[in-house]
Length: 143
Figure 1: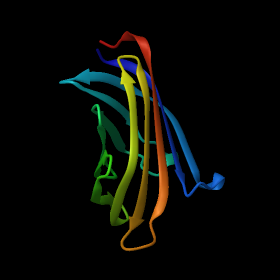
Figure 2: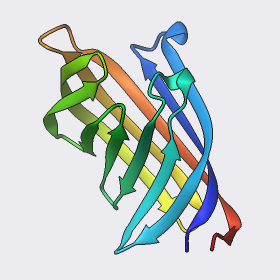
Figure 3: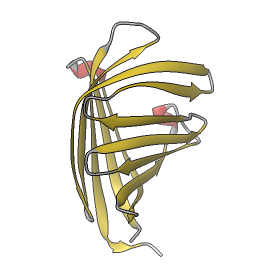
Figure 4: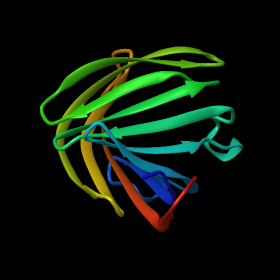
């Protein structure tokens, strides 16, 4: 059931209009073992060229995996507090993520994920952050 997909990722920090990052990229979308997967290649614009991002989606949580020039595994589940190591070519960052709320509405045609959380880097003041992922899968399957 692997399909081509258009994947939109919007990240907003602290309700500031100038702190909005939006990326729209082609990728793939499929279902395996009761989970949906959205996969795409990062570009130079994101600063993570050479990285593959995979979003593994369940009913009540999702996992964002990055492998390549940047490596991380971030779990998003309501009321979860997590420490994440974010490995970049410039060094490793320790991120503290405190999930307030998530909403997942995904089916065989794609869908939408919303996560609201506070994120801080190495003891700094937490930043309220909102992540929105929209997946629009094409009708026909890939071979």
